[in-house]
Image 1 (cartoon, rainbow, N blue to C red):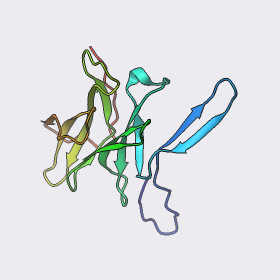
Image 2 (image 1 turned 90 degrees about the vertical axis):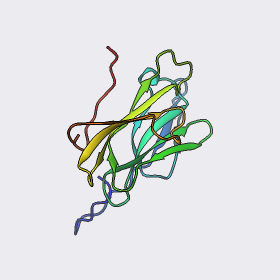
Image 3 (image 1 turned 45 degrees about the vertical axis):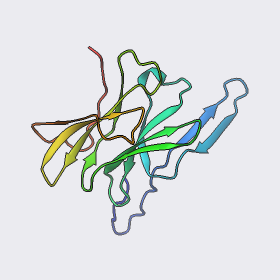
Image 4 (image 1 turned 180 degrees about the horizontal axis):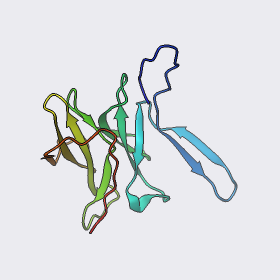
Length: 158
């Protein structure tokens, strides 16, 4: 966990994203840090797992608590970052990439997360444009009850 202040216990480091490239021919391993933000819950489109991919999606942890404060898309080629930061006090969960029907590009799809607003006591499903996280949400679906922090899931087409 990130940011708990417990007397006598050393704080764990904030997680930062790394990339490891494995050369199966010569056994070489190349490691590089992708960003210096506290990012965790890395995701790629399920169809890209174990394959070369350009984009990675991450949740950003708070500096003083283990809560998700925003979402980021990292471009593995250029190092550029796109961000969607949640409003003050709102906390998210691990985001899931959902491919767009008939998508032509790796990032054609949606990033979805449950977001809790403690001041209102309500949760919602937030749907972001995975091609541009800087945009406002495409949809915010208000839910009839709170979704607990730490809820994980996957998108499965029917």
